[in-house]
Image 1 (cartoon, rainbow, N blue to C red):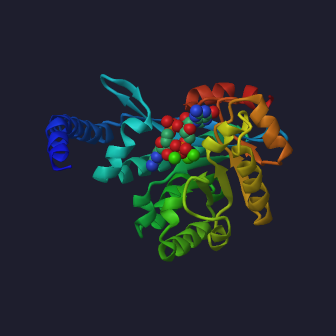
Image 2: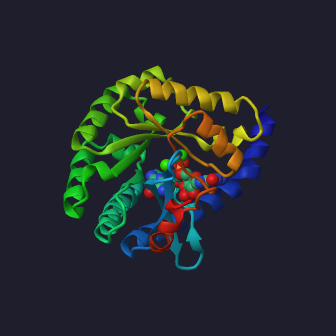
Length: 278
Ligand code: C2E
Ligand code: CA
Ligand code: CA
Ligand code: CA
């Protein structure tokens, strides 16, 4: 065992150095990206499963890298989290999303929510509630049109999560539990939290077409969420078959490539009429 340990050390150490070097480069270009405004928001619709009405859009961040092109979050969110830069990025996302939604309302688009993903860092930051309040005031967006997406992991420290969610709720913003079913929380545990909806993780939605156990999990989540007066959004809906299954189980809203991929704001403006008339 000892010699294997040595071998693996010898094998992996050059790799680790590369990774570290790459990380350092990424870290410094990420700092520049923040200063030079290289982030973009893409929006993906969330539609009412019965009426097809547009209920919200999720804002998803992209990095327009000067040489690498458009990067999805998996290329930079982990390092942003590691270095703490995520707070700055998420605050930019929050402000940009609120301003954009207000602008859409002023342009005469129907009113809908904009959902923003949070990281644990904001959620742990006591001044986050004030930040949200300030950004809402600045943008002029009514709080009910902002939805904050949190994950189960963020609520594991219940002594922090319960008062935090209460304060956010008191501001009048909405709260969604993202990636639901992948974390540790049981449904009964959700009763302690001031949240509006659950987003069923796409891994369960993907299983619907394969007719595996995933289908049962989806219907159980929907039924129990409804018994707790929570709305349910299914993520990652790609096929008609999945949509039909979710319709029968009375899921409230759907989001996924079946309706639209995440698209830039300007593209969204142009196609929203088409989207809501489907
Ligand atoms: P998420 O919050 O679970 O977002 C949904 C992801 O699924 C998005 O990936 C979206 O493009 C993708 N998606 C949507 N519909 C479908 C579908 O029908 N099929 C498949 N296969 N995928 C679909 P994206 O944009 O690459 O984002 C990945 C993750 O990065 C997000 O997962 C979220 O956790 C994180 N993220 C995105 N934007 C932000 C942000 O502004 N702040 C923070 N902290 N995290 C963000
Ligand atoms: Ca999300
Ligand atoms: Ca999700
Ligand atoms: Ca996620």
